[in-house]
Image (cartoon, rainbow, N blue to C red):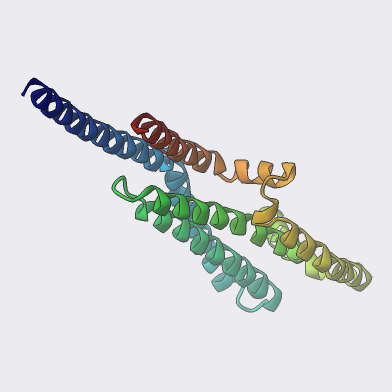
Length: 226
């Protein structure tokens, strides 16, 4: 009888211990997941500020087009910049939406997938900038007009423009090469990593670190059960 009672006590103890471990596992998982979501708050805030800033620039570029509607190259240059900025806004919105989709109740696997997707989105954000390199003449035209009030198209010689257009064409393969090299498979390269860090990847790294701690904790729990 005493042996049966002892077995019953141990069984009850094991059941309570199992429940306690499961509860601890759940609590730690939710806590670390919430930390992971919170770590992305600065990135989300920066992207929202960027959208606001870019919208202001687009507004003034629209006014610029209206005021210079009779000059085709100003209209074309400003329109190109607006297109680039709209693509930038699209990238920012995608990143914000991905962050919004993260929730502390999500599974670890889902969070990891979303974090990888967010990091890939950041990388595409950088890659697009490389594709804009051959269009540097647009920036020259707009900067000189907006800041100095100079019409460089009318001021520079035909030979100067031919040389710069040819140089722009030469930059196309360079920008494509940079676009391909700046891929997710090369994200551990020093220069790609540096670009990612400057774009807010440190927030994603923190979030991934919190998720990794969840996996480590689960491994320890499973080891203790064995």
